[in-house]
Image 1 (cartoon, rainbow, N blue to C red):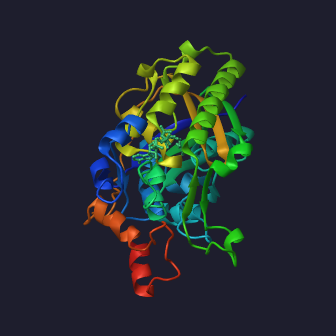
Image 2 (image 1 turned 90 degrees about the vertical axis):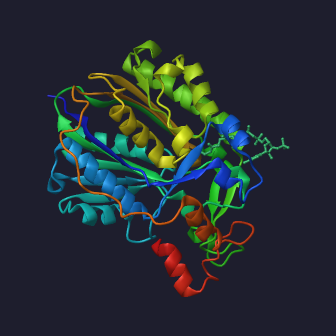
Length: 377
Ligand code: UT7
């Protein structure tokens, strides 16, 4: 009998502090009009807690939704770029927070596609029989290392997290097709310098956060990679564009999403959008959009979902997911974030105070007690 990996739980955790386009124009040479018309973004969230905390709340909600005890989880995949520390990994922090004592814990970084790559990895492990239950997280805390002095990137990103629970089943559900790839010729079009071994003893100090970002090149490569991957995944699985009930895409720019939908031959009414309120949350965009689609009743029982994404690398994917019969949660988690006592602009200004005018973090120059206060936030 064939084993599949059904998505039986979903949950998101959005930090409450909202940063508007007008907030950004208090310290950047930009306008609400430019940001809205070029990207579709109106606001984004800024987190007052760590990425592990965001992930733990999202995962607890997803487990309650699935009716799964944390002790039953075999594997936690933490998908994203934003890690609390180099070592230990972040998935182990989520494991402790959940009490998922039996689980293996793995971080997976393919930038914005990390959740989708994680979903493909966990699905494959369930389908081979290696594991039966997994939590896959997409999370990002970009506000802590965004170059807030560079308007080319500072207006584009936000924080957030969401998770899904996968369980072995003999019903044909969950991810039924995948195309994963990497347009590595374009890897230098998106880079955050300062956080790798390259930077020890070189001109960029370890701990700096300098962003290299060629928006137009990424835009073009993103559209062609996501459109081609979507066409291929549909062909491979024997479906046509009109069979797709809902597209849950990466949310980097409304214009990118519109172009991909056009090339894929799918009308925008069938596309889930969150870019206007959450901006680009990198690895968190697809699972947050999925959780919201379920909350809004946009996923019907048995629906066919298409999930195209791209990110640094330039990694890309398109996944095909057959939803099960249940579109409502089995239970709810009481887990909440601690209250946030600062505005989003105050949180951002706190990070800006640690950056020099070129967006470099002054981690090495900060007074230890201030560095600690920033990192604790
Ligand atoms: O998840 C992967 C992450 N990467 C991406 O998603 C990036 C994909 N790329 C994009 O979304 C778009 O290329 C951007 C939104 C980044 C930029 O939009 P664009 O339509 O490609 O604008 P542009 O780079 O061609 O810039 C047009 C103008 C320039 O001024 P001039 O040279 O025409 O005078 C920029 O300097 O807009 C200027 N500009 C801004 N103006 C106000 C660039 N950023 C801003 C800004 N506010 N924030």
